[in-house]
Each structure stands twice: as structure tokens, then as C-alpha cells.
Image (tube, rainbow, N blue to C red; front, side, top):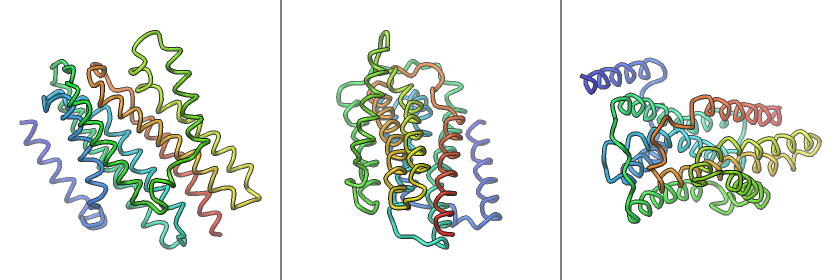
Length: 266
């Protein structure tokens, strides 16, 4: 009955999208792959057992955030006019749209899942992590400037400081603490970047590096958090630590950056 209900809901949603802007406007193959591969990785981590929906549920929102920020990095690194900015942002947000759909389905299914998440084998840990690192690396390599554009010393130092503080203040299970707290702690980098943006208001050439710090710190923190959740899926027995509220704050930050970009075009 639940499968039938999901199928009917998917049909209604598809019809609604068709009426809104045409179904083709909501289809982007790269965004789909970016969500599907890490979802498969979540099931690989538990040996393709049903408990994989719990791992997918607790990682897919972060995956979509990383995909969105990678896309946004590509936008701010490319010479783009105001007319091309809106379509680029629409495509970038599709990965979040797909992530929300997968997260919603996983939350519905995981409600009936009482199965304990098994401890994975070393091979399962490695393969699941490689799938995630591989798809995120391919996403970065496709952006202007390639993977090198996603390397920033300031962001890496902020990441190192955050990891150290979380690890040394954890009573036990430092992996779980890092996986849970790194995404939120990444907003320290966001604040550093936003402060840099305001301080560089009179020098447009300095706004880009400040934006990069804000974006890259969030990318690093969420990427490592997902790595840990895939490598140690047995940590995720309760409710997920990443909720829609977190996604809302990230979207609010992206909206702010977009406003700065648009003002720069005026």
C-alpha cells in the first residue's frame, strides 16, 4: 500500500511540475547522478540491507548541500551576466530538489525500519566512501578551474581547527561527534567569509576570495561528515542530526550571496 501511495504521489508531483514550467525544466542528469550515487553508497555501506534507508536519510541532505555549493562555486568563478545568472541558479537548486525527494521517501520508509544497522566490513567502508568522494570530485573537476579551485588554505585551516576542537572535547566516539557537529561548525567559516565580504565592499576584487572561504568551509565540513557517516554507518541508530532547519540556513546564506552578486551587476 505504501509503495502504491508513493507511486501516486510521484505521478501527481510530475503532473504539477508539468503544469508549472514543463517537466523538462526539472530534469538535470548531472544533478540526478550526484544524488543517486551517494544514495547507492549508503546501501553499499550496510551491505544493501534495508537499514540503508537510514544512512541515506541522514546523508542525502548534506549531499545535496555539497552539490549545490559546488554548482555555486562554478557560478561565481565564471564570467556570467545577470541574464544568465537566474537559469544557472535554477539548475544548481535542482540537486537540492532531488535531495529533498529522496530524503522524504527515506524518512517515510525508515519509520518502519527497526533493523539494527550492521557494522560494515572494511571493503564496504572503502567502497561507499570512494563512491561519495568520486562523485563529489567529479563535480568539482567539472567546475571552472577544476579541483584546484576548491583548495583554499584559509578554509582548510578553519576546518582543521574545528575538527581539533570537536575531537578533543568529545568524551567518546570522536567520529560520531565530528559527523554530527562539523556541518553546523562550518558556519564559523561562513561568518568569516561574510565578514570579509562586508569589509571588502569597496574592493570588488576581494569579494570573490571571501565568498570562497564561506562556501569551501561548508563544502569541506559536509563532505567529511558524509564520509564519516558512510564509513561508520552503525553510528546512526537514532534520528538524523541534519534537519531541514540546517538546509534552510544554508539556503538563506546562498540567497544573501546571490543578492551580493546581483547588486554587483547593478
